[in-house]
Length: 245
Image (cartoon, rainbow, N blue to C red; front, top):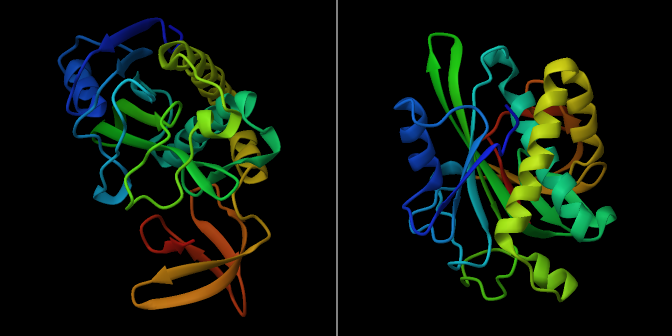
């Protein structure tokens, strides 16, 4: 069944990922079900952070996937496919040339964050039972918490006001196309991902532990490691380094 075949709207929930995972593991949501929240009051971000969103103004959703035919060793390919779907969607409405994916799966427009992805997995041994893909994309919000670093919304970019529910359904179509392609051509997903990688070929500043250093981004490996070059060729796993922007 295509992603988005079932589209459930929630007025308020703590976390769409928590809700979707509970429904999926209870057998009440199958592959392709999307849970969209008008208000999420305890949203989760990467590395234990929270995801802040003004009620009713943005895309906040979780998609239930059952990637049972995909080895867990290809987990980054799934993450890359989701990030590409978000890029496909956002670049339709914003300036395509300025929309990029910041490793591992944040959505950036120029040097400003427009969205993010958090994937929660439920495994049985070395096999996937379910993957819950949480996506937050700034659509109509124009006022953000001061602690956020350079956020941006679609409305700030274009000056237009949008229907978040309608755009969420459009995003579901993008997810379905990228997920379907993943099953037939994983290497192409990584190639597309690298073509849209934020900072590619540029000098960036990273922090590892207490050390801050400059290095040039050269790509991302098939298993999801960030590749850079300065005096040495380097590679970093997710969580090993932090971008200083």
